[in-house]
Length: 392
Image (cartoon, rainbow, N blue to C red; front, side, top):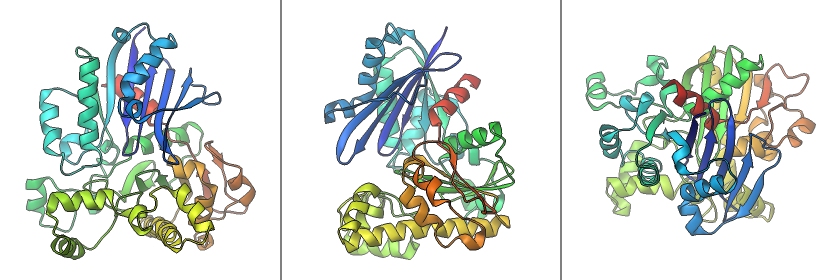
């Protein structure tokens, strides 16, 4: 039976899995938790029996090689030659990247051209592709688009207010991201009979986005040409006045490339907290000790999410279901409660008891009296990528 390797490198983490033609065999999640590098493994899709170990920076920076060795040690595969094909998540602006594609020399050349447009993702993706080719020199690689789910959003959401001929010539559109995650959530909702007409999904992790869905299809999304647009994120600025961007470049003495790196790496929660942390968990601890910078960062974070929820309710003419997903959305009952506070006028009412007991499981957390269903749905990008790869 064929075996596949799935590679999902995010802005602050890396996930790997080995599948056969039917199911997941082995999974590894490399991440930074409270400043320390860790990896969590589990086998046969059994998320209830994970093994988490601390690792050093060298292992974290060579996570794929380490994962493959662990798969061999656990007898998931006999050798790397058992892997018949590989898929990797692709986050890049451009119409070309709104389709799943075989990664060949032309693909690598094209995505290299976009390196400066998505500096949090494309360089990481290129590094991972290089590493894959080094470990698996003769194995086919499939690029799974993170923006394909938003390919057919309405024209009013797709277009920026710039001349249409310029947009077409330079391929500047509202592409949107987190599409693999959203697709996996939509499929879960359909399978569980919970799909509704008007859904808003809050994908809250290292990167954050809010997505509006009508009849299970993308209607609008907060991320734009790149994943930098939209919400206040861990280190990304989110929405900002273009004139402020030009003014900052002038006053800080930064060119376009330096400024883009600044907005991606030094802003967001990290910038608002005075450089103390980009991690919501750390900021909650600091806030509890009276740190005003942490309090401001968390308040701005929450308000940016509420703003998009309100905007999309207005765009769609209502809401039936609100979904929380991503690391923060799935794990933090505190942030879910803060986001839903004062949204009763929209029909959003949490059950405090259900919310407080929900961590990393799929569950309805709304009150019995809430007109709007509020759900925690754990995203499964890896599984979605495995399905999409087999179709390619």
